[in-house]
Length: 80
Image 1 (cartoon, rainbow, N blue to C red):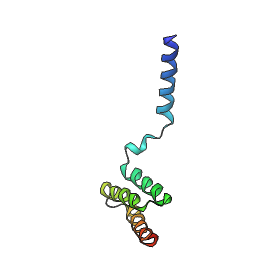
Image 2 (image 1 turned 90 degrees about the horizontal axis):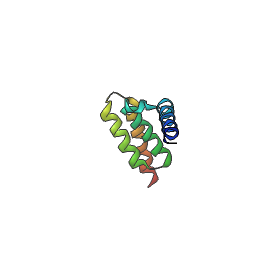
Image 3 (image 1 turned 180 degrees about the vertical axis):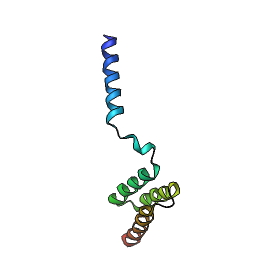
Image 4 (image 1 turned 90 degrees about the vertical axis):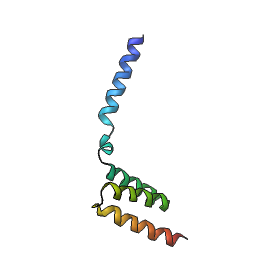
């Protein structure tokens, strides 16, 4: 019976490794950018700004992070 569970666990692990997009481990800029977008959509602009700032730290030439951070700062001031 243990070999059946071991085989199932191996299949689950193989499927996870195959289907999970692991690119975020190699691209921290994109990961922080997407996270900032998610926080911005939820209306939590302080967290979005922090995520965009981290994205800029990882890729200072990434213009989308600067633009999105500026937009989040603007939305944060309009929200008050």
